[in-house]
Structures are given as structure tokens and as C-alpha cells.
Image 1 (tube, rainbow, N blue to C red):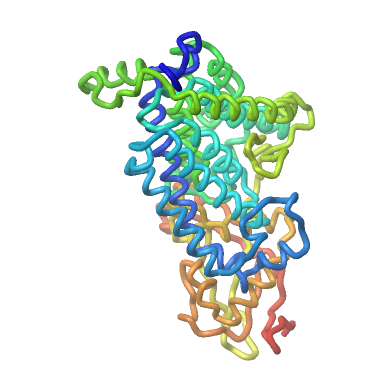
Image 2 (cartoon, one colour):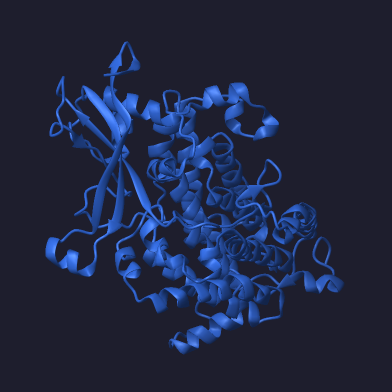
Length: 493
């Protein structure tokens, strides 16, 4: 047939990944919609024209090659809102299946738009967008763009690209742990991690108090699932599907015991995206579902233009994979690194080191002119620990960027934005206050603010029964002395 796939290229497409395509497209459509929704409420107070690290200042001192972005042409808070709303709407359109109902190039253009718009945020997002899952969302969106619509067969090359991405994600995390911290090698890392992770979840307290033999078993399971199981992705089916189900189980445990934005959910979507239709049918039979209920029917052949585009993209991804592959083999492995500015093939990893104590920065204010020890009241953040009687909330897959960055400050990471944050509190800036769980001054400006360092630990089961608290905290020091606002500038009291 003219303009369709020749018979000798029959290997190029597969009739065994229709469900996988639907999961990948709709799953990442949902994650993009969530990420852009978060930008609507957080980007402007963090990075907007009057934000803590304004984009216009950043682009003025950097170059296009440092990070291509729409906002290098022009930035305004209004344009940011337009971009974020476009991202939300495009993501929702994929969730309901509108682009997939058209020709092969329609979902391609939609996902490329999502990729470019989100890349534009990430490449000017500075420290607030310096997380591994930002690059993951960019790379996954670019790869998924070339899966085609329901009118064409699934290209096997893109399924292989998904497997390669999943391999780097899981195996990179395993290698960085093994190479990075002796507590992963002596099986003690999870004695601490559930308590010291950035944003604990509702069940993290319970996970922390599991027996130590369970924590050692968790670490062994982590090593097996990240160092051994990923190699199954390169073998024939059903072994990649078996690996995927292992990943879903392990990532599900992480979802239950922590808040890591959309990292775990993106990994689950990628894992389900390598499960073939035969395995889905087997699972359906196991749960009594009718055969074929979940899988759409794809066309028997692919348009030649689709073949050419996908093959060219696969070749590009192969060339760009050289440095990430060498990074995996390196004793000086980089974690969450991009080797080119478009974030198409990246290096991943998580928790190469585990902190064994939890120090938290709390922010306090007062309206008293000469405050005494009892005059200070505390601002509450949405996700990070604050009052000891508050159970850690479930916030993931939503990403609380301010809360995450607050976790890094006691670890010694630079935080030039923090002084601006204190200034915004003294101004009672509404967009900034909306990022918090509780403003103790009900929208009115305090006279003085300060930052205090506390050491947190979970209560024991006996302490929990006796007090009802989830945490015990000890005041260590005032790390930012009381400051006031004079002429728009911070001044020590």
C-alpha cells in the first residue's frame, strides 16, 4: 500500500502494547496537568516578577544555551498564567482521549507542546525546579509524544525507549545508593529514612516503627528491585512485564510511606507502559475481567511518514544516550543530571545519602515591638513538620516546592531566596501566604520575624499513646535573628 509500512518492516510496530500506549499517554497527560496546575499557584510567588527568585533577573544574566525557554523571549506573570492554563487544558484533553482519536500527528503535537511549555518552566525555575522529576517529566513527555494515535500501531522503538528510560530511572537510583552511603550497604538506611525524609506522609510514623529486621528487608528489597530487576527490561516478554509489576509494588510502598511529588507515580506509569497486552489479559482473567475489555484495536499498518519521524527520533535518543549510559558505569556517577539543555535523555537517582537526624527550620513572627520569649507565633507550612501534634499529611503527587526547599536549608544548601521570603512575610504578601497552611496573623503584617532551628524525632508508640503527638522537637538555636522591614529592606531588630 502506498504511503504505509512495507512488509519487510513488520518488526517496527507491535500489536501487543495497545493498553500500554493508553496508560502512558493518559498517565503522563494527568501528571502534566497536575504539574501545570501547581505552577498556577506557586510559580508567581516563587519565580514571578515579584517572586523570591524572579525569572527576569535570571534570564538577564544567563544565555539561551543555558536552558532554552519560551520565557527567554519575554516573561510576565500574565504569560505564565496563559502557559500554565494551556498545559492544564492540553493534559486534560489527553486524559479524556481527544488527541488519540485523531491522526498520528495530533497526539505528537499535543505532547510536544506539553514538553516545550514545561521545559520552559524548568529551564528558568532555578532551585525551585531543580528536582529529578522535572527532567523526568520532560523526557517522558517527549518520548510518549511519538507513540501515535489509536489509528496507527504502537511503534516498538518507542516502547524500547520507555524501557530504557525506566531502566535508567530505577538502576540509576540503585547505583547511587550503593555507591553513595554506607548505610545502604550495611542495610541500616531505613532505620532513619522514614523519619528524616523531606516530607513524611500519614503512614511514615508507622513505617518508621516497624521492626528493624523489616527495615533491613526493605533495603534488601530496594537493592534487588533497583540493581537486579531492571535488567529484565532488556529480555523478551513476559520478563519486562514481571519487572514492571515489581516496580509497581515497590513504588506503591513509597507512595504509602512518603511524599515525593510525582516521582513514584511517573515511575508506576512508565512501568505499566512496558506491560504487554498478553500480561494485561492474564491479569484481567485473574480478576475475572472479560477478554479484550481494556485494549483498543490499532490499525494493521503505519503511515510511512510516521515511520520516518519515529525512526529519526529513536536514532536521536540513541545518540543522546551515550553520556547517560557512561554515567551509569562511572564511579563518579551524577544524580539527576541533564547532559543537554532540552532534557531528552537524563541521569536519575534518589537518596544517594540518608540523613540520620531531622533538623527543621521554623519561621516565627510577632506583632510586639519588643518581643519576649512568649510573644512569638509560628507560621505553619502545608507539608513539612511544624506543630508536634499534627500528623504528616498526604500531599503527593502534588509538589510543594517551598516546603521541599525548606528541608534543604539545614543541610547546608544555599538559600538566597530565604531573605526574600522573610520580607514577603513582613509585607503580608497574599500570594506568599497562600502557599502556607496557616498565617497566624490572618493576613495582617507582623512587626518582626525570625527563623529558629529545631531538631525533630518521631514520638515512640508509648509517647504517642500518652500525648497524642506525632513528633518530639527540641529547640536548638535562632539561626536568623529577629528582622524588621525598614524602607522595603530587612533590618536586624
